[in-house]
Image (cartoon, rainbow, N blue to C red):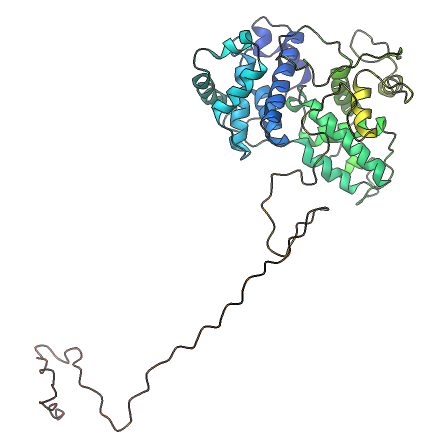
Length: 407
């Protein structure tokens, strides 16, 4: 299988779109709009979070081989969602996806689909399959997020709040190219690290701890430096700190993964050097952007992430990316458990045994009685005893059987 991970510097200067004259900022905006469109369309169609995430990964991988000038992003997004639905066993008809897309796009944007939108998507599907080398199975950070959280020890309410926030960050990370840079295990660890920093949840103990484990994630992935984790966190935080740019995104949908809420009071924002990173390091950036609980309208990721973690419902004006709360089971939808059994997941309902009518016992088979010992067995010829032997005629009731042959 091909390797789908690239250096961060190559994503800024070696993509087909950049070689085709599209600058890095514009390409990043196109990727965000395509990912956001897949999530919005999939949500309207009732698709699972893993189906939408798989479609977004297909989208990012496709444009590592093709330019946005060659293939319009919204057509590609519909094709990726169509293929992801079949791969994740949640298929949707192509015409239904196009119908939802048409309702979301403007008339000018929908003209990219051509005269026959269905034929355009079906034709592009073959190109998509060849581009991704038929490597259809994709892993996402969601499963690792739940797996790692189960091994952590601490206050359950704080742990749940941290997992809730990390799940939100994983959703929004789909609008970045992190899936092209790092494995899902590393992304899950980094965003749990970010959520722990924001929610003030310090992880001091965990199950299966060994003396060689300095940090909790060393038990799962070794040799991950804090610089790598903080770089991943910065890429997600940049989603919320960027100003909304002019886009031709679908009507009613924001260009980024979150909806901005304008603050009513001034909020301290960290100064950024030319490299785009907050001066003073990662912790200072977080401290400078910590929300004030007295201020109801905080801007950027603070209102989005902390509002999800501290409230039962989202703040006004904030839209979630896919589902907000992580489900109990983060794998594929499972069939109902056997009668009288339950899966080892908390909260799964117990199914009582079915009350079937009793089955009557099968009567024993009656065999005919054996022949009396004084009665001779009927004569039946067998195989010839020697060549040329002629079978005697079968005796009848009027003709007694012949006497036995002397030997």
